[in-house]
Length: 186
Image (cartoon, rainbow, N blue to C red; front, side, top):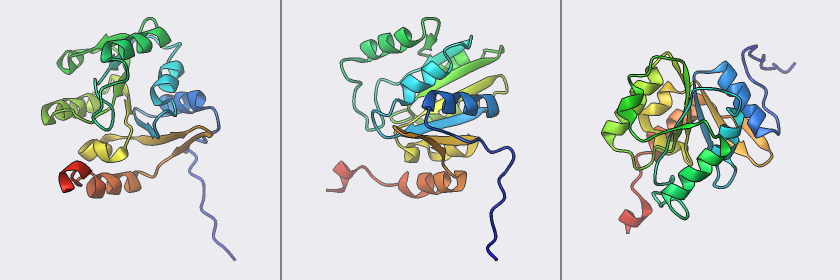
């Protein structure tokens, strides 16, 4: 007789609608990591998922997961984010977020290229009880030690989303996060 793994009653069932998948994750968890391949709609789906919510903040990053400047310009990228949700509050200074006491949803776009001091501040934000945080990253390995503070890791695909096992994500960060960039190997 084959043993079947019992389903955790707290586990979220994700489907083909990524906006709905992200909404489910935000309702259930405090700190969510959204990852996936380029062009899958990580930021677009996330902003649409919080479309009806108030007190939504966005902390951008002028570079993507490879360190490349956003297509067009960072200013055009921010204009695009604002076009998705007119009342989103675009923040440039992490320090200012640390003094907010009201309940908010914070979208942090990418960790790649952030200094150690910024990563420490992001860690402090992840610990704040009044914030639900959706961290976007193109590559899990860039999360480093911040992966430990994630309650759920949701990988998006064009066909839908699925939860990534936290232990696997931690191993990815521990092993692959230490690799030197390819350009420095040769």
